[in-house]
Image (tube, rainbow, N blue to C red; front, side, top):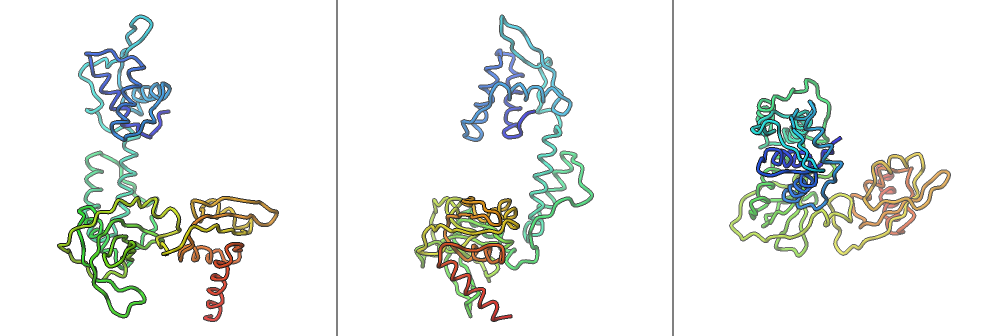
Length: 334
């Protein structure tokens, strides 16, 4: 079966070859054409092999694909292929089942934003896609995203998104949880991130050396600024690699976290790792030793506390003592 990764790129590359009557395309030429198209479109040099192109052609000839008609012409010991109808192209055909499924998944992803203010256009776009591509709409809901449409600050998601795209400096009125009064400051937004159903924007406040993380539910007002935008070249996937969530503690380094996990809870932690660095060091009869390497932050402590009774912190001692204090304070508050 044809793999879905880069499938559409390959189908259209093959279509272009089959339509070209001015050149003979043997199997090696078809493979080269597919790999060239993948490289031009994605920059990836991980191309496909002969077997994949054979499978693609079989799929394109099937009823589930495009139902194309090819003629295979022998040329000495080799065979080249072209469309039986020189005027045929898959560009004139409707969607095949795979493409229709991809469109449905795209609509489903877009629908996640329908609850956000200023994203009302998504519903209209959804209906237009369904109409143009004649895709059957599901009468019943089959999936739900973890999105709280009543969360404060959602109305700012699209404004920050637009400001990041346009490299627009903003003037932010912001009141943190521990602030008695709002403050106003210049802000250069770089990245939006959702964690635990809350939205955060990461950017630069010129008053500070390090990046500033803002919770959207604490934003009071946004206005445009005429200041020159300070461009960032930060790779935010790498920026958040060493933490859980969005908090980057200042002056903290990577630490090795050793946990002893009850085997009854281990399946949950293995199927949903606490962090990408998670690995098993030792399996025992009743417990398993798990190792993490990351920067301890508020979000990590919250996750560990959520497994209260099933996880024991072995190292570092500082993290163990801090969690103890939080638990003791919690008990006093009961």
